Amino acid sequence: MPEISLIIPTLNEAENLPLLLPKIAAALSGRDWEAIIVDDASTDQTPAVCVELVKRYPIKFLSRRYAENGLSGAVLHGMAQASGEFCGGHGCRFAASAGADPGVAGAAGEK
Image 1 (cartoon, rainbow, N blue to C red):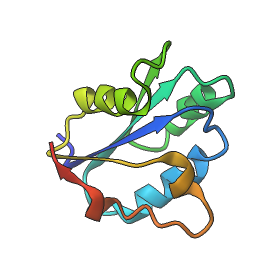
Image 2: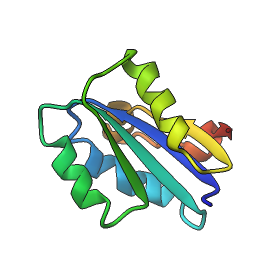
Image 3: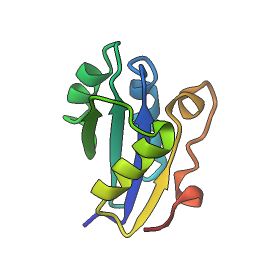
Image 4: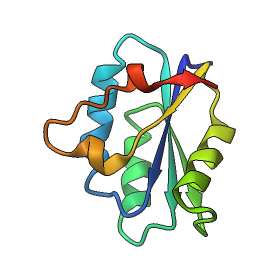
């Protein structure tokens, strides 16, 4: 069981995910973690990018055909699949922007 589950809701984030995951991996280096990417029917290459990222990072990729209940629905859907002792969420665009620090450890809360 991972120590930390990080929920990442996405919608058309193919460009940002490859920037975000290395930052998360660096921030959580030495810890047991998982990222749960919950995609809300992206029309870009987000699903294909996730298929590649799963090969390099501890990711669960969940694809929702319909974006029920918006962003909060995506986060709750991811939390239901989380197996970490602590669970937190992070927006993809903000975290992937230049110079942004995921700061995941400080944002995590008990599941």
